Image 1 (spheres, rainbow, N blue to C red):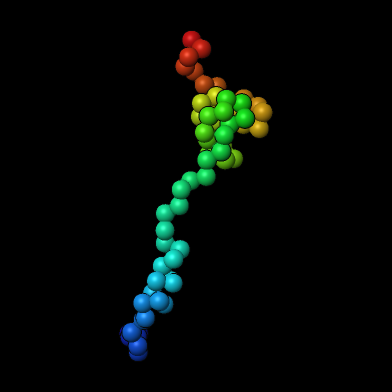
Image 2: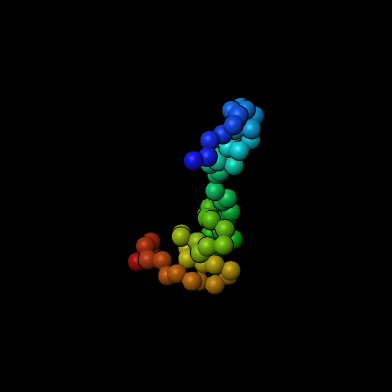
Length: 62
């Protein structure tokens, strides 16, 4: 079984953990309805992506 020969220093351990953080998701504005949405996804409010209606949203129109 592998056993460490020396204790890992605080700096070495913390440098290894620098990538284990939470990041806020990137939010962009929908060019059609100006609501916040995730990039490279159809807008959940209006259903448009890249200038075309991809998803038909049922709601206030009825």
